Length: 114
Image (cartoon, rainbow, N blue to C red):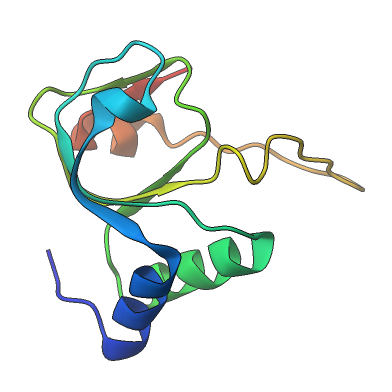
């Protein structure tokens, strides 16, 4: 995986990330190998900034909620996991919203979910 730029590394450090984190801690099934990094943003703004920077730097990542109905391979995830569970437990979409599921990409990375 690519190294982080200085601004991205600073943001991750500020948010408090867990390195080599057991995904069993973050899933309702309590299974799964380790993720390279788990970051839990503390606001919508910090989540947005983190995701924007990860995408700009082409750092592989996935955004998860509470980890219900989520299976992670015992081989783990060589990516950044952005967990927005507590901060965004209630999401209201105003206007027309669409849901996109990228199942093939998730499965290839060792993730399955509803």
